[in-house]
Length: 507
Ligand code: ZN
Image (cartoon, rainbow, N blue to C red):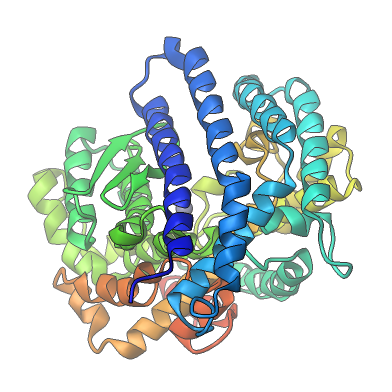
């Protein structure tokens, strides 16, 4: 027996709205990679129009009626564990969130953030926070209004209503409960590493290598770890990202640094991890919750896993070093695998989040979480952001921030209106380590296989347990189903200690 007509019609309506989003995604990709600067004005109008159309389609009364009919259908709701029940749960969630926002607020936020992103870029170039400040103020106000429309439980706070949009179920209290002990443990690891007398050589990170050859090399690696170029592309952009419109058309971007192959390789493996998640979603569910990723944190777990657990491992470089020689010839002669492995794992506190190593990265996120929580609660005036930022960098990383360009103006997120987003980077990092431990338990000889260039067992393992499920499970349930436990920082801390301490001559 087929699904009831109301369910078929509901999915059809959802797919129509998704098509608009998918069209915008290609236009956004084009804007970052191909579009001439002159196209900006009309492109932002094209995107705003599509956003409005998508909002109209997904909040249509008929969608609500179909949802209610489906929910009342005993056959559809019979099995609480079925994919259909999960799809209905997620469709209800999306509909109820979307209809809580008045179209005027959606449009206002789109308009304000599109101008703010431009002003932020200019302010960052000039390292002049005062130019961005009025925009940030307005964005914070609009985000507080947005949060008020969504609402939050009595025990929670304003920030929670915004975070829910990126990580279902995530609250500030939970994040704090993870971050506080994690910070103490990270500090202890950092103190030992920074006090060590032995450290890996940085020589490989200062080696000039032809960027065209770098491009061919990282493409080969992306393909080898499992990114499917028949269903995806790799281009360059200022800020690497993974975009595209659906699982058969995934657009990755990366960037290259002439003196550091590991920059371009790391960002390519990272984005390829996101891309393999997208390619692993079921095509026949495209446009429905069962064909979408669970959350930003889970998405980030897939990218970090390939970038860090795989790309910065000794086994990966056992395979990768002879590959390097094939591409770069004499330029890389005299660099043994062990030295490149060391160079990929140098720990050095710095000002810039996107350049941070695995040991300091999460400190950058903790600073941003504290600040955005205070901005959104009204406890921190946007005008005081630079001072508060610099103070936290003193406390967390013992650094004196030299200017706002390398301080509170470095990230694009707040100018895009994204509050509640940052912690998903750390949640993803922790999830990656926990999933990787589970994969090592499940797949005999996993790491030895990397040394032979065999990455398919890991990709297939992730595909079966994470990618192919779409949004059937919420983040916490997915973590328990994949790893057998709720999210914990311990696997990540074990990962750091077991890898970094020997490299720094520590036991
Ligand atoms: Zn990412």
